[in-house]
Length: 400
Image 1 (cartoon, rainbow, N blue to C red):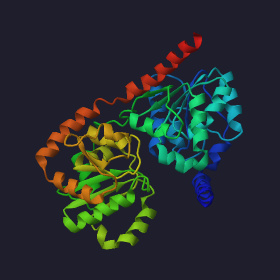
Image 2 (image 1 turned 90 degrees about the horizontal axis):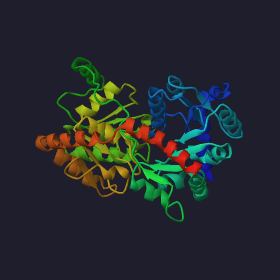
Image 3 (image 1 turned 90 degrees about the vertical axis):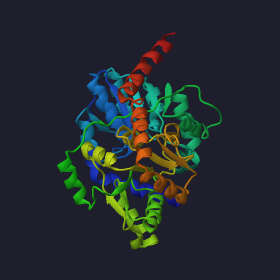
Image 4 (image 1 turned 180 degrees about the horizontal axis):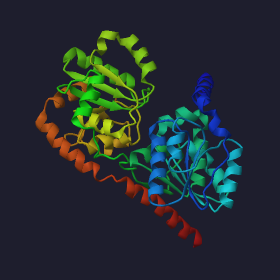
């Protein structure tokens, strides 16, 4: 109960600066696809929804976006499509209006946005639900109601899409039985991977954070949270600092400041002389340049279905070291080829693997080729066309 109250307070505080977004009149494009996301924060699922909206508009497909909660990315969505912040009892009225405007197709982007699939079905919509969350995250969010929510999504979605079999199996553990109305398809690489800062611009960027061109860098890109393993990343940085201070650790992502203070206090400030914290990077040229400059991505997550950061790193040739049993990325992070998978949360093993790999230029060169080759198999355009095609297939089934 206390956790639920604290989470509710946290959500209210997050939403408060953007309350005005709920006051706007609804904007619905006739006969459009509707893309639903659970909020507008700068996190993986929301960024995926934004890029689906962007890509469908590039395909000249009309799109209307819906978020169940407001957030910082409101104007990012508005660049490509009308964005409506709708919640509670207003949802049924909104989708009734959308149906009258000729809208019939909806993509729900997460389990949380999938909470409304019963409303969509009642209002005559065909729905594809994308599920990226895994068992621990779902149960942690919904507590005792997790099974009811998952069953409602299964019973009211035309098709459910998982990024990997690993995520599908994790979701099935929230149910009593196997799924039939589902498919496997990862989202692919939605960031452009061939755009970089000039050498001069990148030098200026590195100077800003006290990074030298000769530094050996280990990076991670994520929101600084327990699920993303921010504490594990710091633990590895501390241990590596005691072993070899030539290796720098860079964490890129929002909300890291508060958590940083907590864990700095725990470990002692001297343990982090090799750590650099950078806030969320919007500029894809900066992020690509920093990913390419880094020798290794250490994905410290405890649970991460199929994070885009892995494909982003692969696309610039940077291998990944991560924990086993933590997500669907284990399908593409292959030992000795595109990185290493170590036993869960063993930071000593992570330190050993980083130290073994980071000075082995021949191995890094071989892995760079393998990573780039793997990234080419994951195309975001293909993923979006796949989603569009599903509605055509579902429509044919309903006719028969």
